[in-house]
Image (cartoon, rainbow, N blue to C red):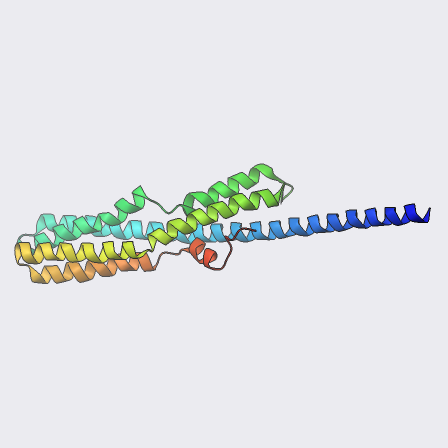
Length: 209
């Protein structure tokens, strides 16, 4: 009897330990899932503000300089025409490639809503893997948005357009304005990019368990 009681005690203890471990793992998954979801939601909110702000700035510069090019002559007309061409890149690129986090935050929210009952996700340890995948994807996208290639494109592109004005039309004042002014605008767009997913990856939030 004593032996059977000892065996039963060991089995009960093992079951209780397994239950506690499972509960602890589930709690960890829930915590990490909430952390990832908060990062994506905050990043999407800030990126949305950045997106529409620069859409407005780029569109305004394009329209304004296009109008000025139509009502001026000589070197000023050429300056405004080149400036309008450069400004068109801002809204065009934003339209062709909006930051992925804008859609991924909603995608994660919709996916979690399908398995959420009374405010709790059905299996957070499965859901967190999908959430981390989306966060990693957004971090890769944001790394591209802020990479040295973008800096080279902005600086090199504006220097090239400035050279067109200077060498092609002997408008060195316009060349300097385009090279310096265009670079400042382009660099400001890159440097103000929120990049929340990229920062979260640097903190290890996308690491696999």
